[in-house]
Image (cartoon, rainbow, N blue to C red):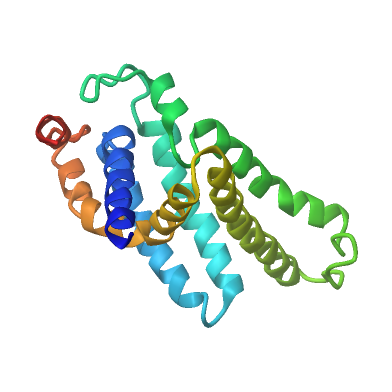
Length: 205
């Protein structure tokens, strides 16, 4: 059972890497995201509000910017797959689902601005510091909610193991990304925009 779990984890990580991380800019942004996520993980034990602010404003924005703006979206000759096919088989959040998640994240401060109590859940904010800390609490819930929602969703459309593996992958992605993409900024500085090693790895996979 553990062996199957770890094999499925390796498969999800490999598919995520080979399908969605061709761009060296995207890889470099994932390196930045990984570092800031690890900081956010540590801060979660000391100040969850700071953790949420760093996690969303730095980690998630840099991570998703790489996917939305820099990752190629044409035909994937390395994997011989269209962008539409990759979006259809994506285990986690594809670009369409990410748009919804990021829209909820971006809209949440507006809800708090117009209703400072958030339907009676918060003490009305007075200063911008109060506002920022309350927004961070909402973002923390959005992050955890987004993770749990897709995990449970996968229980029904795939199976329980797939959902648990995906959740494990997401939580441990910063560690894996640090290992995979720590050299990406150096390659980018050398003018390499696309990872040439992916084709070799896919052919030998």
